Image 1 (cartoon, one colour):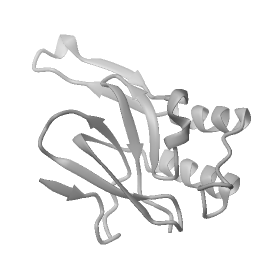
Image 2 (cartoon, helix red, strand yellow):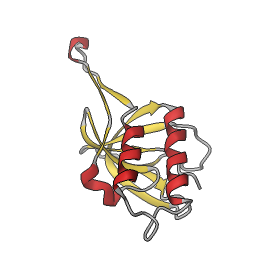
Image 3 (cartoon, one colour):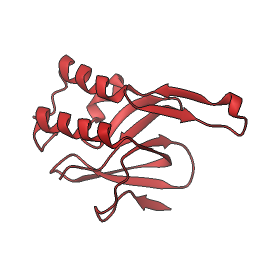
Image 4 (cartoon, one colour):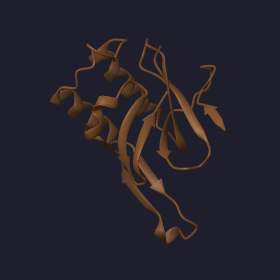
Length: 140
């Protein structure tokens, strides 16, 4: 099964965490600003909302890269990584289980080892689920 998140651009999903797992479901998202790239990954989605943080992320990418976060525009300086990391760490994610005493809640961390894959609306992070992607509506 293949599911394109916000396929017509009319949905208002907010932030979503895309966690890689063998689920038989592949999720796709438009990303990369005006480049309008489509990226996809098999896994599951955790809706996060957080529209205020989504707006901060959009503002970051617009300020730092304009509407194009591909080479040669997407040089990830130490300051850019730090600034995006500070925004990402505002996003809490819970790992729920049937036994509520086992629930864990952690804030996201930017996966700095994968910054070469980071573009607008497709941000590698570390979560309570392990490696994941923070996805959001593309700004184009």
